[in-house]
Length: 441
Image 1 (spheres, rainbow, N blue to C red):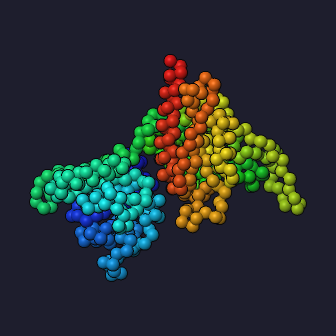
Image 2 (image 1 turned 120 degrees about the horizontal axis):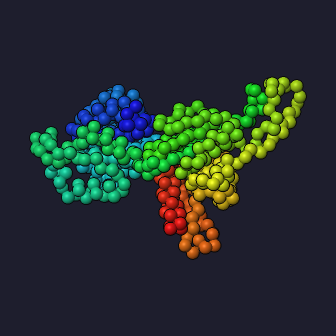
Image 3 (image 1 turned 135 degrees about the horizontal axis):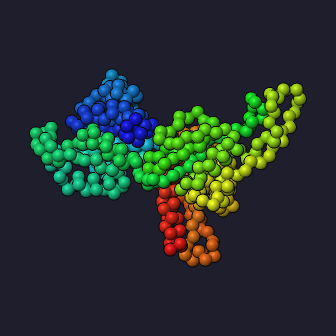
């Protein structure tokens, strides 16, 4: 597997195509993204369809092509995709990255000023995904002061500009304004999607449920799918970390380039965790570990002979607490899956277990959620996190009093939340290391 494939595999990418002769390059870009393992969806403006047919991109991506919110120029005989009146929110939440290539001067101007008058600009405004744009236009249009200001405005809004290149243009003139070649766009995607925020750090992530045996065929378990933990392991690896993923039973594919250990019970997970913690910089406990196990596991299948069955349960050792108390203590991040009093319970757990950070999520599955908001928690591809972390101010350092800061991440795909959480963890880990070095100096 190439480095590009490792960076793009499994990523959800929206390729936005605007009007311009360079739209032909987007066909090759679609194919190359697909070959790298990315899931690609195409969004075209009306002007783009005058240069390359939607059918081309439908064939290359294997999915319908999306147009304007309401586009009367694309009748049923022309449309090989479909128009969508409310598709922008679904696409905005789905995307890990948005690439507009080619990006016309008109679309750049719209995005710079927050206009949302078609599906592409609307979903960009509604998305928290990483955003790229590859300008493509005549050299005079590119040199125009308004275009330059608009590009500067976009990069100031965290858009990543790709190009343009210089050379012979379709109009016959020579100069800046050519869309980046596909290979250059792919190189930029690779470098930008790998943040390097955890370069060289050793990270241990636990994920999934644990199963506690009752007899040879039955067990006590929980509803965790492992999605959040696997997404965090992937995000940490992409940020440059050396990742060890310790997982309970899960049907998810093992992330690329991580050291993987499969376990079943809480005791197996504890042994695996404690054997790796000595050279660990950051420990992230997303696993839904069983609090109790059966005291005496039946050697044979228990027969259904009585109306009631009584099981004696004993408490499992708390792995998170053990890690937080270990002599070679890493930076410790816990998770709190709560069904009520989320904020209060998370803060209490943060302090009681002496954690550095905790990410709390609601797994109540309440039916009163808004219909437009995706379901979150166990077995869902979406989640929302309320993150708390401790630190000391100079005033409170002598009294050893801890302050608690917080960050709320609204509903999003778990892969997107994982990137945000990894970035926050990296920032706070580095800050804690700087404080420790200052205190020991």
